[in-house]
Image (cartoon, rainbow, N blue to C red; front, top):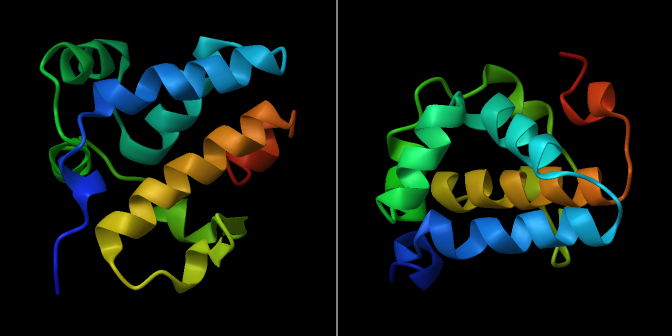
Length: 117
């Protein structure tokens, strides 16, 4: 199976879009950082380093310090696809992150977004 081109996309290329989406809806970069940190375990320093290093999404998730074991509790639809049904583990993680960002932008409560954490 061919590798999806999004896997090689630098995290730094999509991160500003996440921030812009949240800010357009009256939310903050800190909220986006919090959900990304919850999903991956990256702290502020780690996130900044991945942005500066132009780390690919594939490496971003492969090098995640502490992937959240509750990520499998994330359910919903992104781009018409149910995230819990995505077979490729890397694509599923990317879509989990997309869905979390969407939930922040929609104003969902942070306790709900973080699956009760």
